[in-house]
Image (tube, rainbow, N blue to C red; front, side, top):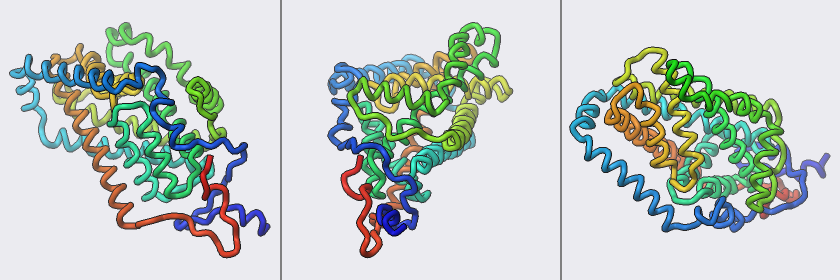
Length: 360
């Protein structure tokens, strides 16, 4: 019994590592998380190309605003303060739900984190998505998690499974909601509905593990640490679904100003934003999905409002989402300053676990 206890780290938070590594030591060093090695193509490695694409997207947005400024100005005037505040509150709740989903996955893998620590790791790391490159957010979260002696491969597994779950739920939400908005939408977005059953199947933990391991093999990275349990995945799915409902509500606050507040508009808001987010997520060349997400959202909203109003909604959504990211990151930084170092404290006369050294 003493030998078993000696192999387990005791954290400053009082929470031990409940499921130590059981696989062979396959170390995932920070160098292996470099964007040049994880980027899916040589195209994605070009800083000049990413900067150029971002400049084009920004230029198109500015041109769209300038070319339709009278209509845009009129649309902006329709946005009341309470609409923007309501959208912001929903964004904060949605981001918080996604963080709890990620925390549930990490706990299921054997590294439960106190809520303040989870906020710090998740949201300070998430700022990396605004840096051009495919993996800065993941790399930042992995290294921040090391402040709590969470093995790198374990935190990387939780983040990858969390991203896959968020994407799959978004596709399911879009496939279910968009056809409900109108007969025209049902005809136009039949392909989203068609892939919904496939997306549902992909929510099985084993399917997610196989898919991510295949992608990691292509990128010449080690496989996931281990399989998330069914109960852990169920908890993550519940929180992720709640998060998407909150994100849909944030879009509804903005869209209902121009399209009304009917149930069909809420279905359009939820499904349209989920589809637009998925587009921005999958086009990895643009940091934070800036550009593709807004273009996709404007296209989805085209049947129910003018392009100027849709552009205002897309840009207002982007601003509110960015404020939400910065707000939660600020909370995470404040928690870090207030609590200081949280390195684990080993019990006397016990050897620290392998989680305290360079970890897989």
